[in-house]
Length: 314
Image (cartoon, rainbow, N blue to C red; front, side):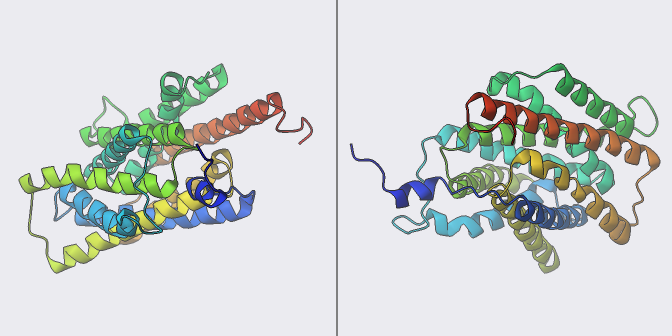
């Protein structure tokens, strides 16, 4: 069997470049697009069902990825060795989007967004069983701190608790599954392949569900639905590009700037002012996420040193 050519290999494994500032700039740009997508989805939730909004979002996503589905073209990206994982990742991504949009219908966007940022804590727990990673006491303490932040925001057992708060939590869990499955395919699947299958899986599932809740959208709704899909896909694509220039542990702290954007835009558009409990809980969640990212960076450095790929003085 002949070895794959350099051209073929590079197509499946994009070259990594160590440019952390470029990666940080890209991740900051992605938060703007993702924040706009969330704000627009919340706006549409007043007139369209969550399933329909998500369907429009994934329809636009699929149309953008259409060139990667044309056989014998240079962009064709449907060849995969992980079909099951790709489809499960697409279903998990769909769950993350659908549950979050549903939560936006009932919750202030700052509260929903802050709660959804608990996903790194779920990744820590899932990594044990799915990635066979060992998690030390410090990372578990960081996870516990993040969960305290969630409890501060939700305040179960009080009059401030809203049952819809579970939607962004489930969304965060689905996103954690998405991230873990992305790691499982890392180095084996091209990012374009992963995005293409995610679009197809999400659109396929939603197309089976949307007839049961369909409300004829106005041209106004369609225009904003297109904005949701374009902003979301653009944001996700920029995130993929960012990870070519810097590690997750470097980029993670800057992803939290999305909380700032949605809080500002939520106030300007919906007149929503985050209460002090939401702010305090968000501080706990962000702090735990930052520490988890730090421990991930330390763990990776130790692993590279152990394998001789990094100098102890680096």
